[in-house]
Length: 241
Image (cartoon, rainbow, N blue to C red):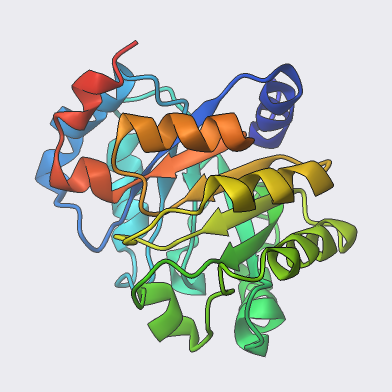
């Protein structure tokens, strides 16, 4: 059976757009899982991401176990901290915050996670994570104590993304942040995509079908949507298969 990364790579090479629904364990009541995931299953979503900036111990694992009861879609961990790691998922985005200069989120947290990952059998996908300026402070900024990359310096964003690829990152993730005022611009997505030979993920601030289509047209191989679904589950009906 092919792994999650191989599926993403195959889709990127054929131009098939992927959509991940992001579920934050800290904001998502367990009693909503069944109804919510049924809507995910009937939408064009291809993956489910689970994770958040601040999540209590064991909450993530319990949520993942409940999600997997109702879907056959790949469930991918998008962790904000070591405490969120669970081997119940299908894959783990091993995120390095390469847009910042806080060593804890460049390599420190990763070292701390090895004892949990050793022998877990998890598919681990090295991912270069870039926080992009969006018009407001995000939870990622507060937790990691890093600043986003300014949208006015596109070349710096491109160079940072390319540096991640050259370091061996298998995915590059451009993130505007949860509840962003402005999503990552099409100009930034296009410029980054032109330089990369690995799949590109874009998330944060995408609240409309038009914004989703714009991200795909600009070159995003996968788009991640979270807040739009949290605030309005009718968004699913617009994304029905």
